[in-house]
Length: 102
Image 1 (cartoon, helix red, strand yellow):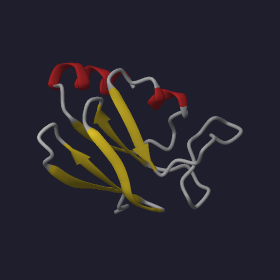
Image 2 (tube, rainbow, N blue to C red):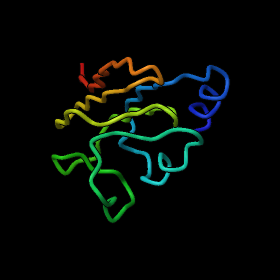
Image 3 (cartoon, rainbow, N blue to C red):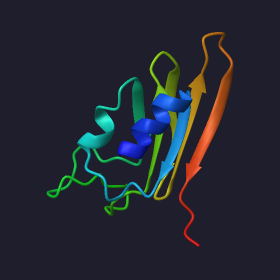
Image 4 (tube, rainbow, N blue to C red):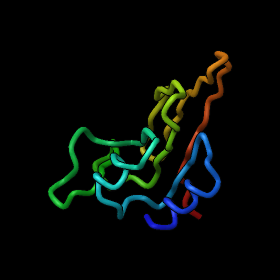
């Protein structure tokens, strides 16, 4: 998470799509300063504190959206989440964050 925090501070993005997050604990995304986290997240972490996807396995993606932007999940699947983000002027973009193993 240290590298993620450094990137967020240095680049100051509005939206970040992360992959390979299945090994991270649930509380690691809830406290990121200035961002809301969207993913294939069960309401509660499992017994080990890992976030679970809709298929019951640790999920591998998180989309971070800067506070102040309106965002909502449009679609979720086992390895994909689509987030709709609206800017201050009302412009809208849909961002698909998908984990595709090679």
